Length: 449
Image 1 (spheres, rainbow, N blue to C red):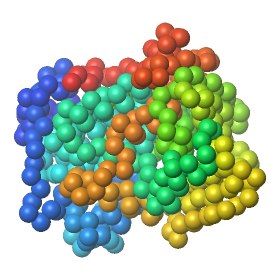
Image 2: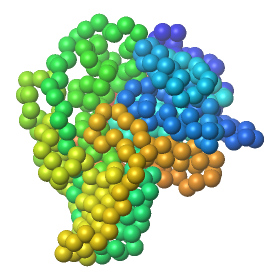
Image 3: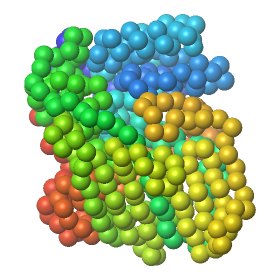
Image 4: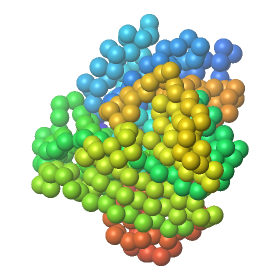
């Protein structure tokens, strides 16, 4: 079965789940989310789908005997990715997972309890709701959705199928961040009113996308998944899809601001903004293949006179805030600097009164990664499935933070100041902007549940 159509037919014919009202591909399969009882030893059978730069985040939590999980599948649409992933995992586990290029076969296997979805952005939400409909719990990398509509569907899917869905906003599991957010909520800096989030990187020139033969070993049809079909263009599949328009990626805001927006929103205890103001542009290498902004300044106004500001510089590595990424929380009685390394607490006069720095390390602005926070976050996902820990990032929290990324992008694409409904984030002042709430799907991939 080399084509995505055949993959879907296989899933429809062989899936053990049937009759729940999820329609895929006009082929009209219905699937009932079956409740699989975890074995008496609590072991979870796990599949990883998407074996690119985030693979290293999963070595330790899966290899750890205390996690009590079995890696049963390594799945990717590129054959070489599966081979490399198997070799990498062989250094961490003493058994061999199956290599499978077809996502639909993986979720059709009733032995699979949980799926780690580390695919490109456009696959995050569809891959997640299909897996949950097939009875799987899902750890989905950030951003959890490609557009706001998909975030709403993920919340709906979680409620309908009753599965744990956790987004990969791993700083939610950092002990130092958990500690300082609790202290902020308890009033350590008075009333928190402003969060300044930022990200700085030195990404270089990108080749201009040109039509090219599909790379050997790549299932381009399945890679495109829910996106409208296009001829393959050079260097699209391996990371540059982030910068080549909106079919697959969510630009740097979806790629990285997701994390800092999440911490800012968590600290301020806000949900949906009243107003979104964005100034963004592509300033570097005007003639290269990068087709979206590379620099963004964004402001979100929330009820209660609270504000989140974003400073994102993808290709100018001047560290305005003296670090590559992080969030500064301002309160009426003090301030907090918090990033992946820990936090520093200041009084209202700017005097440091407390700091707590992590002993471990997690990649900051480098590609890919893995580290202490990711390990804790994945372990929390496993334990939440078992009912032994409170889930640190329920999908409604992940989707709400991700919405700030989408609103940033929509404001950039329309050139408008957006006014939003504070009950659900919907844009109230622009029909043009609301047209971008949802994407165009390849025929047969429209979600219907």
